[in-house]
Length: 229
Image (cartoon, rainbow, N blue to C red; front, side, top):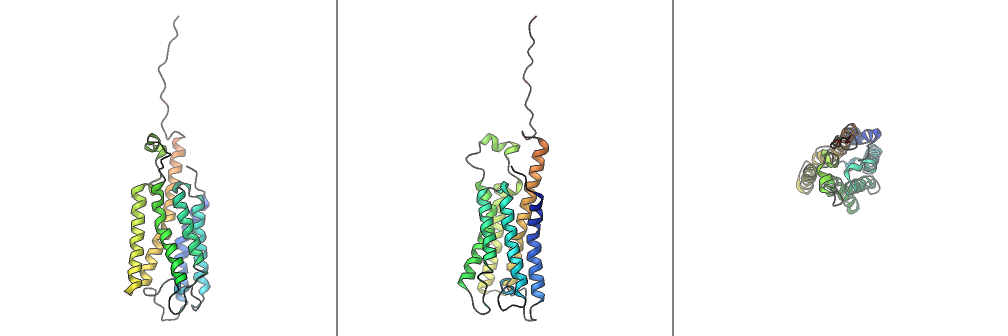
């Protein structure tokens, strides 16, 4: 397993910070009628919002954080990294198709759905990485065990949680009054998981490095033969 560079920790940690900073600062710039419990994050980046560049800039940087994490998080496996990268690109693309002040936008809704689904499904992608190319004896050994964040039960449970939060957001969109709250909770959960995954990969790599290339299992010495005479 390749090492995760130190800068990847800073990039992953920046994602939730950028998200919360964006909606807090941009929300404070809106007229009194804006309600973060009811109104969505997209409205802060809409053309008619006050200082929409604040939320727009944070979304662009957020997408870059996802892309940077996907670039170096080799422990997650290719399917997960691909989905995380798609989520990053779709997050940036939201700026190109902003939500209008009045009414909806099919283009914005499509890009937002792609971003949310990709970022919700990427943890489960690591469930596909214990490949048929890894022998059972190797996968069962300490050196063949993936970091805990990428093990099947954890990965599938995280994706199930993120999809449940996304489902809550959909319910609120279709007839609730807490759309903004549901979106913020789901978006923050999505933004925090890359940091957890990076930390898990770094910890596993340090453990394996300390244990040595064989995962801490030293070869047993064979019987000593004495020469006759």
